[in-house]
Length: 117
Image 1 (cartoon, rainbow, N blue to C red):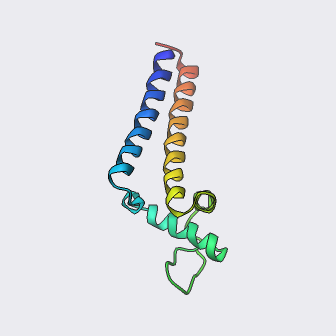
Image 2 (cartoon, rainbow, N blue to C red):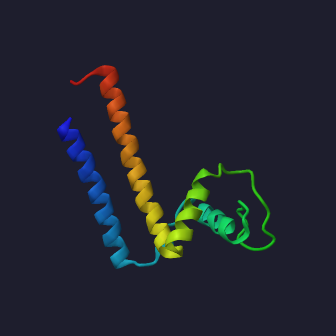
Protein backbone atom coordinates (compact mmCIF):
# COMPACT_ATOMS: atom_id res chain seq x y z
CA UNK A 1 0.00 0.00 0.00
CA UNK A 2 2.70 2.59 0.80
CA UNK A 3 4.33 1.94 -2.60
CA UNK A 4 1.06 2.49 -4.47
CA UNK A 5 0.33 5.67 -2.50
CA UNK A 6 3.86 6.95 -3.14
CA UNK A 7 3.56 6.23 -6.87
CA UNK A 8 0.19 7.96 -7.02
CA UNK A 9 1.51 11.04 -5.24
CA UNK A 10 4.63 11.06 -7.43
CA UNK A 11 2.45 10.87 -10.54
CA UNK A 12 0.30 13.81 -9.42
CA UNK A 13 3.35 15.90 -8.52
CA UNK A 14 4.96 15.03 -11.87
CA UNK A 15 1.81 16.10 -13.77
CA UNK A 16 1.61 19.37 -11.84
CA UNK A 17 5.31 20.09 -12.45
CA UNK A 18 4.87 19.30 -16.13
CA UNK A 19 1.87 21.63 -16.28
CA UNK A 20 3.91 24.39 -14.61
CA UNK A 21 6.84 23.87 -16.96
CA UNK A 22 4.62 23.95 -20.04
CA UNK A 23 2.95 27.15 -18.80
CA UNK A 24 6.38 28.75 -18.35
CA UNK A 25 7.38 27.88 -21.89
CA UNK A 26 3.99 28.62 -23.48
CA UNK A 27 1.89 30.96 -21.35
CA UNK A 28 -1.05 30.81 -23.81
CA UNK A 29 -3.65 28.80 -21.91
CA UNK A 30 -5.69 28.41 -25.09
CA UNK A 31 -3.13 25.89 -26.34
CA UNK A 32 -4.41 23.48 -23.65
CA UNK A 33 -7.95 23.65 -24.97
CA UNK A 34 -8.20 20.62 -27.22
CA UNK A 35 -10.95 18.15 -28.08
CA UNK A 36 -14.12 19.21 -26.24
CA UNK A 37 -12.47 21.69 -23.83
CA UNK A 38 -13.20 24.80 -25.96
CA UNK A 39 -16.90 23.93 -25.90
CA UNK A 40 -16.88 23.68 -22.10
CA UNK A 41 -15.05 27.01 -21.78
CA UNK A 42 -17.60 28.63 -24.12
CA UNK A 43 -20.44 27.20 -22.04
CA UNK A 44 -18.81 28.43 -18.82
CA UNK A 45 -18.30 31.92 -20.26
CA UNK A 46 -21.95 31.99 -21.35
CA UNK A 47 -23.07 30.99 -17.85
CA UNK A 48 -21.04 33.87 -16.42
CA UNK A 49 -22.01 36.46 -19.03
CA UNK A 50 -25.61 35.49 -19.85
CA UNK A 51 -26.70 33.09 -17.11
CA UNK A 52 -27.48 30.36 -19.62
CA UNK A 53 -25.76 27.10 -20.58
CA UNK A 54 -25.09 27.54 -24.29
CA UNK A 55 -22.54 26.39 -26.85
CA UNK A 56 -23.06 29.55 -28.93
CA UNK A 57 -19.87 31.60 -29.11
CA UNK A 58 -21.63 34.58 -30.69
CA UNK A 59 -25.18 35.97 -30.45
CA UNK A 60 -27.82 34.74 -30.49
CA UNK A 61 -27.00 32.80 -27.35
CA UNK A 62 -29.35 29.83 -27.45
CA UNK A 63 -29.61 27.36 -24.54
CA UNK A 64 -28.42 23.81 -25.04
CA UNK A 65 -29.56 20.52 -23.60
CA UNK A 66 -26.63 18.62 -25.12
CA UNK A 67 -24.31 18.61 -22.09
CA UNK A 68 -24.68 17.72 -18.45
CA UNK A 69 -24.21 21.06 -16.69
CA UNK A 70 -21.96 19.92 -13.81
CA UNK A 71 -18.56 20.48 -15.45
CA UNK A 72 -19.43 23.75 -17.24
CA UNK A 73 -20.82 25.10 -13.96
CA UNK A 74 -17.67 24.06 -12.08
CA UNK A 75 -15.59 25.68 -14.80
CA UNK A 76 -17.73 28.83 -14.66
CA UNK A 77 -17.09 29.02 -10.92
CA UNK A 78 -13.34 28.65 -11.43
CA UNK A 79 -13.33 31.26 -14.20
CA UNK A 80 -15.39 33.60 -12.04
CA UNK A 81 -13.11 33.24 -9.01
CA UNK A 82 -9.70 33.08 -10.69
CA UNK A 83 -10.27 34.93 -13.97
CA UNK A 84 -10.07 33.71 -17.56
CA UNK A 85 -6.45 32.51 -17.63
CA UNK A 86 -5.95 31.31 -14.07
CA UNK A 87 -9.42 29.74 -14.11
CA UNK A 88 -8.42 27.42 -16.95
CA UNK A 89 -5.20 26.54 -15.11
CA UNK A 90 -7.24 25.87 -11.95
CA UNK A 91 -9.52 23.62 -13.99
CA UNK A 92 -6.49 21.67 -15.23
CA UNK A 93 -5.30 21.25 -11.62
CA UNK A 94 -8.79 20.10 -10.56
CA UNK A 95 -8.79 17.61 -13.45
CA UNK A 96 -5.42 16.20 -12.39
CA UNK A 97 -6.61 15.93 -8.78
CA UNK A 98 -9.90 14.27 -9.71
CA UNK A 99 -8.04 11.79 -11.90
CA UNK A 100 -5.71 10.93 -9.02
CA UNK A 101 -8.66 10.58 -6.67
CA UNK A 102 -10.39 8.24 -9.12
CA UNK A 103 -7.26 6.08 -9.43
CA UNK A 104 -6.87 5.97 -5.64
CA UNK A 105 -10.51 5.04 -5.07
CA UNK A 106 -10.38 2.38 -7.76
CA UNK A 107 -7.24 0.93 -6.20
CA UNK A 108 -8.90 0.84 -2.77
CA UNK A 109 -12.00 -0.82 -4.21
CA UNK A 110 -10.02 -3.50 -6.04
CA UNK A 111 -7.84 -4.11 -2.99
CA UNK A 112 -10.90 -4.46 -0.77
CA UNK A 113 -12.59 -6.79 -3.22
CA UNK A 114 -9.62 -8.99 -4.11
CA UNK A 115 -7.12 -8.42 -1.30
CA UNK A 116 -3.42 -7.69 -1.58
CA UNK A 117 -1.23 -9.83 -3.80
